[in-house]
Length: 85
Image 1 (cartoon, rainbow, N blue to C red):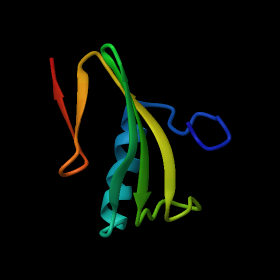
Image 2: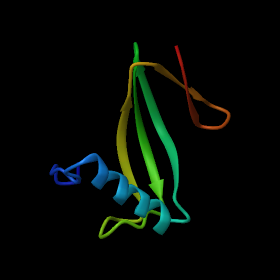
Image 3: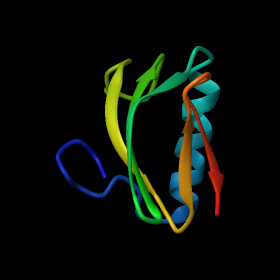
Image 4: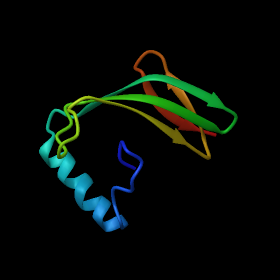
C-alpha cells in the first residue's frame, strides 16, 4: 500500500517490475531494523530505509513490516534478522 492507503500494484507482475526498477535505480539502497517486537510466532519490525529512488517517494522511509509463520530473532551484534522455528 502507498502512504495514503491506496493499492500500489494491481498484479504481482506489476509489483515485480516496479521493485526491479527500484533496485536498479537505487544503488545506495540500505535498510536498518530500528526495533522489533516478537509475540509468539509473529514478528513486527520498524525498518528505516535509506537511498530509495522510487518516483516521488522520499529517499528515507520509516515503515513497519511483519513476518509469519516463523519466529524471527534479532541478532543484536549485527542488527540482522534471522528466521528459525
